[in-house]
Length: 250
Ligand code: PGA
Image (cartoon, rainbow, N blue to C red; front, side):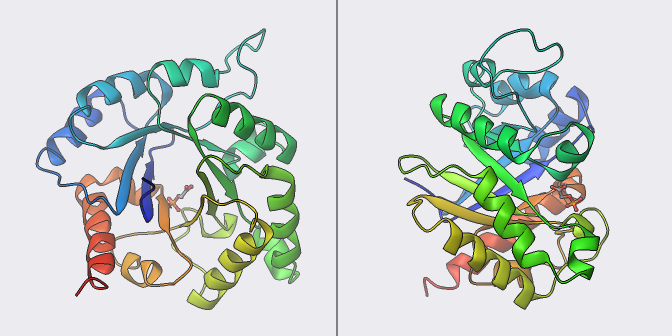
């Protein structure tokens, strides 16, 4: 069954085994809600250990990127096949830091999504405009093109798209609720032939603003960088999501 929301913590190039054990301690008595999947996305070398120590918890583990080829002469790259073998649940593809530092193009992202689906791993596909595109009033067209070129139409597996305005990442600035709603609806319209689609928001999500972000109707979760490194804060964000969804049950 597909949950309603996904809350994922992207550790980026931070932390190692010590912090992984700290995380596991903080989440020792974690009670997962069936409505919200929780996922941590640590650096490659500790993914296998993360899967191992979290196996009883229902906490998912993801990777921050991968190649689209399953094997070959690609020094330093990691295959979706290997990630699937070690039990990886999610993989981010097309994060803006990968797009700008490692030439992950829209075509690369699309091919990666196809390989991930083939290996039963859920892709988290990042899209988002630069400050410059926003200034030019070009956000709508930019996102439309990025989505149509990066996301293949898949009808038998979950696809997660994360709207992450580049200017909001790590900056403490977030778009207005109306802006987020507008872009999420655009993504949904562009991909309306994908039956299992989740659109989540990323960019400076924290304990203070998460309640407001989760209450935007088109937001189905969050991809969290900085605030996910503070495990108590990450747990508080998760609990805020649970509280929000529970408010509809009364
Ligand atoms: P941030 O990062 O939460 O630190 O802004 C989000 C991301 O890059 O996915």
